[in-house]
Image 1: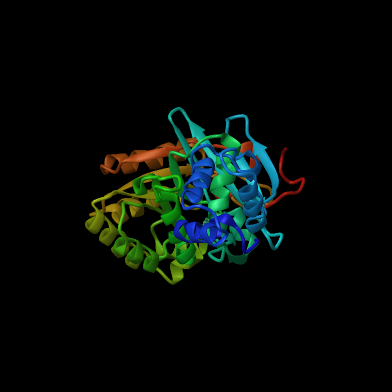
Image 2: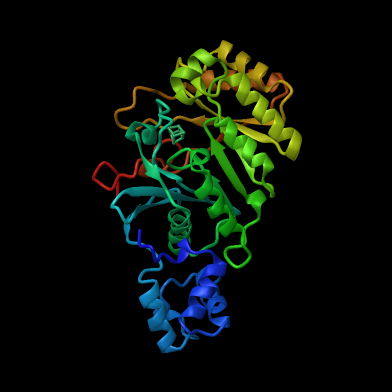
Length: 346
Ligand code: SF4
């Protein structure tokens, strides 16, 4: 990543940089309007800027957006961008259009240190944290691809967002800045595998950022094997943190559960989950597991999933089933792996 990435400087610093280059005060606003309102990413196309200033901008910020390794498009409309970073690492982000929404699913790390056993990113191991501008670049590449501003952002791509909190919050600040895309914080969701200290910090921040927790199972022994970070932040501590988030924000937390055949889809698993939900303002989102090459896990059979849901509903817990999107291009949750090779369909 070049040090001169336009997204590596805050809006205030951007204005100062342009002033230092001898440009008038309104120039920064004009450039921001081209990028964040008109989705134009070439200085040459910013026709209300003088030729001299366009040249100065090109010299200061040689590339507004980095090269794209690959764009992939699923028949269901989901698209995935594989971004090549300055050190040649690859990172993926996904745009999921629906009838009246457009959700961008963003990555915060290259690889992931958490190592959930059913996750393709987890299999990669951890390489490094992303910077806030590398997160912003994912957003703007998807904006360029779709031609639209997202309605929702979910930090649910590669990596554990709460293990890269500085960059995460810098990116959220840019996303919500009225000079940028101006998204409302309530349109943003952070999905964590259960990093308790991250939940505590989120509570102390202003705004209405949503919380999702990839719970998957509600007994420590099984969760220790599926989501190894559970050994550090066991269910009792996690429940306390979720409860505290609900109390402080009055916002409902989403508990994500990827149902795996004979692993966490049995009657006892459903009952454990019911106990975990007691006293919490939560809803459970059942996520269908998408098998990927080399995975030892299989999705729960439909009849078991139905039974599982029935038990939760009977206990008064709101349950949804997340539609699986982007299967053809391995864009679903837990399938991102920064691959650009032939393992992925074009
Ligand atoms: S599911 Fe999320 S937290 Fe777990 S390994 Fe994959 S990217 Fe990391």
